[in-house]
Image (cartoon, rainbow, N blue to C red; front, top):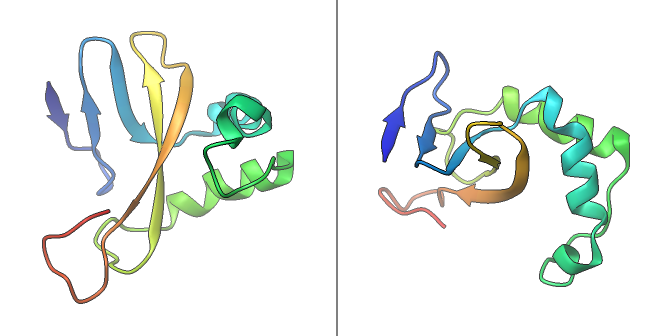
Length: 102
């Protein structure tokens, strides 16, 4: 497993098969497909999103810093080596609780 720092503070965590990384513009179609899947949505609190919603989510992540506590961050889960998005995850560092993430 490798921890690869990027130019921003959004790291990439990689294994032989998967990468957890920042969402990218090219993830838009895959994100829409995931969010429209009843099999995925049944375990979530969100509903299907529009193309504009997916684009806005990806764009908003570019302006967030992982150092910002109290806010949610979406990261992509991608297959390696193709880079194809197969999922996403939310990460939050609670305000006032150093060293804790959920």
